[in-house]
Length: 376
Image 1 (cartoon, rainbow, N blue to C red):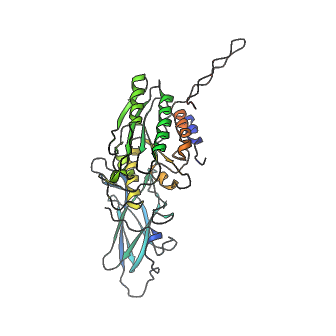
Image 2: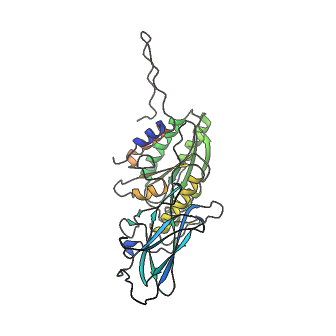
Image 3: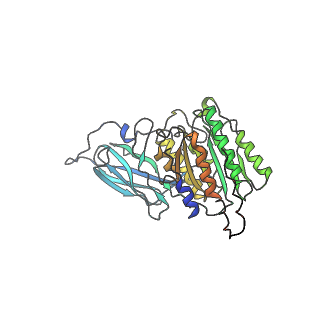
């Protein structure tokens, strides 16, 4: 399997308009200055967290964005650094098409620029937007920046949200497998001071026909049974309710637990609350929405883990990293449904490591072996 999981255990121990990505931007020769030609400008913008109260991205100061003369981003034409309004002006540009992209992290270490995306309309490419300078000077999208993931809690007894993708691409058999592995995870934390919340999403969050369970202690059998019942009740919606909305998913769980674990079998295909569609596709709007809302979860103090479950060759790791962090095995993991219980096992051991077998001095009898956390 290609999933990387060792880091989890080691860490515990220690607008709807989509502007085409560069690959899909209209062909254009690089603008070349000419004597006496009029010059224009591009207003560029950057954002960080989504404001939970207004739903609007918070302007980000200190982001460095650059205009390039080519889609490969190899010929710079000018750059600027955003001010407190989250915007700045790249001036002195001659008429033509330019490609604007973030090129440096803002100071302070709280945010990192996004470098690459993989829209459904094209292959992987830089996170950039085409802007045409003519009589009307353009303004770019608000370029999202990923908030750095908070540290993994180094104690047993944290509050964890299990955030499930129940979109239409999840088969009935895959849903059964996920529920069984989730139930084993609950058993693994049973009797500890941990709390578990259950949340779902598809086009909306919770997904149509579902209800979220708030953080519930699993220190006693009643709480364990309540969480298991919430897992068993997860249902897949149909019709326009079946799409994948990371934006809504993260918005629905801001501020409720110490860790949010997103389980998804693919990429976001809609965004917004309520969901905006058509189009139903993975584009910059859908990805940005997930980033802003995941940032809000992190800003409230929770660590985000993103787990891609399904065909490991088709899951876009770079998109999981957008909403979590850049390190596979600690920020995100990729696994199949057949092996998803391995992720749950590593997560349980990271949250509440099993006590070491006590040292026995001869001639005392051997200690009784500790039971396994998982069966099967």
